[in-house]
Length: 173
Image (cartoon, rainbow, N blue to C red; front, side, top):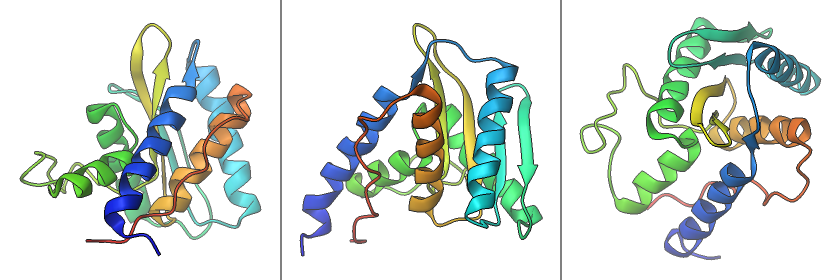
């Protein structure tokens, strides 16, 4: 079995490729609602007890909680979304990058736990020619599964079938 030192760069590369491919030409409230509804339907099919939060830096665009989600899931979604908005990368990618560098979210990366959760499940909404304008966050699943749920829904919405698979988490050092 490969060590975490050899699998982590491959996982980071795969996540970066996902982010480069999942770019919108435009994104507005109607788009947020459509993606939110698609995420809710996908999560319901899996009977996933999740909270789903889509928001810009200034306001919430979509929110829902499925059966079994708790108030903690709402807060975790907010904190994961903060990571995607601040770092312009998925919360899963930020986590793997920090681990690869031997850094911690706090104090090394200045991401205090009360406002940032460096766990998979949040994905940046990147608009072509503009950059990151929002974040889509799911909380209530393990990091890998939350990230993969968002990526699968975005890939369907954007008509992308050529994405690398979401990598399983590398072993911890």
